[in-house]
Amino acid sequence: MKEKILLIGGGGHCKSCIDVLEQEDKYQIAGIVDVPEKLRHTVLGYRIIGTDEDLPDLRKDFKNYLITFGQIKSAEKRRILFKDVKRLGGILPVIVSPSAYVSRHAKVEEGTIIMHYAFVNAGARIGKNCIINSKAVIEHDAVIGDNCHISTGAVVNGGVNIGNGTFFGSNSVSKEYLTIGNNSVVGCGVTVIRDIPASSIKKS
Image 1 (cartoon, rainbow, N blue to C red):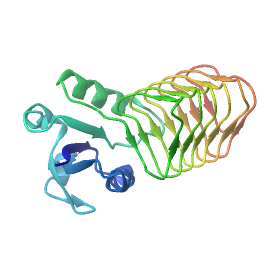
Image 2: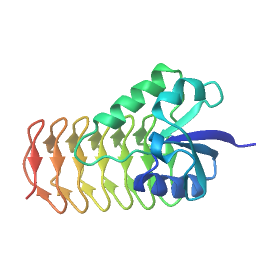
Image 3: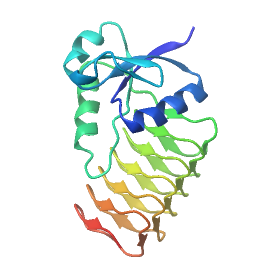
């Protein structure tokens, strides 16, 4: 019998996560936590059964969680939710789409989701509570910090170090062996050819 998992966040990113979970087929989705006004609504047939404030009570019935709240400008909401679940003793498993490739020589930490057709090469390290989105490429020896979102079709080349809380936009590409500082935002379609300081926004 499959273990149940509770999803936190019921927006567009949640739909993508549901599809990955259904394809992986390791967990039974028990329901979704979202804002009060969405209670009893459904997302792809799964019911919203509570709010963030209900997590302590829901923890009595559920041990597995996935944060399905998206991340673009800031990782703060995902970071807070991750800490809340950990404080309550919840488990945040690694979720990997069966259509993704993750080298057995790579390391992926708790709460991270590897989405459809993503590629994680040998020696790569991906931190906690990350989104490695559809068709993203994490090349050899790249390091992705905690609470990062590597967006659709992005290419993080070999040896790149991306700091905690960073968003790396769709179809963006980094030159190898660069450092991108914590809490930065790299926009859509950007080519990164030099280091980026912490808390920077790079649009071109």
